[in-house]
Length: 302
Image 1 (cartoon, rainbow, N blue to C red):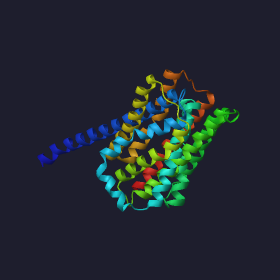
Image 2 (cartoon, rainbow, N blue to C red; image 1 turned 180 degrees about the vertical axis):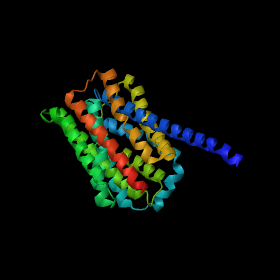
Image 3 (cartoon, helix red, strand yellow; image 1 turned 45 degrees about the vertical axis):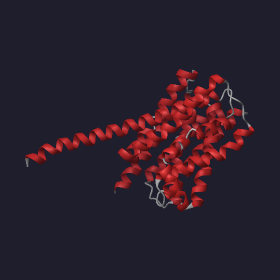
């Protein structure tokens, strides 16, 4: 009896330590992702978004080398057409996000990109047959309203700013569709194989557009390009470790730290101050995303 009594605090301490470790991995992954985005914006002042998308993908190749054993599974790849769909969607996300970063404030890009959480709701219902709480539908509609509010000033603009706003919306939609595809693929393929196939595909798929729009980087830009690629690569590793430790239900709310981190980086590095539309939209998006996450997590436990 005393053994069980003494073991209980140790078990609780172990669980608490694991949860903290997982949370820190997720936070580090989110910070690395936002750091890579900030460098895309900085480097986009002199390089094309096509070139940046290619270089960002190319630096993911070391991850594939680390997972070389999983590449052998390509010979027995399941659901190749769904892989192709997911990979094409991912390439569109890379191009769209790179362009959005170079034409819009960082915080606004991430506010719109968080809209993928709401876009997953109807896609998961139609293509995966998942049950969605009615409160999540209401929260999703509110989140969409927040995105529209944040983008209102940009819809009245012309040229690159308007295209950047549309690119951010496309990135969110394609990211949501890609995540739904990944959910389907994980039923028949190891996650590491899915990531390895995606990385290789992105490098080859982005190369032609990068070659056509290639602008040789200045020598001083190369260190920043390397850091951008490393941050993008390690963000995947950190997030994967965090998800594995604490699961998606706890990781999803932490991923919303993208909003305050991007706002901070935008202000410190680029002197970007969100306007009233951006702040109101970000609040609606953040509140709605938290509600969707909590509602769907509770349903999954039922």
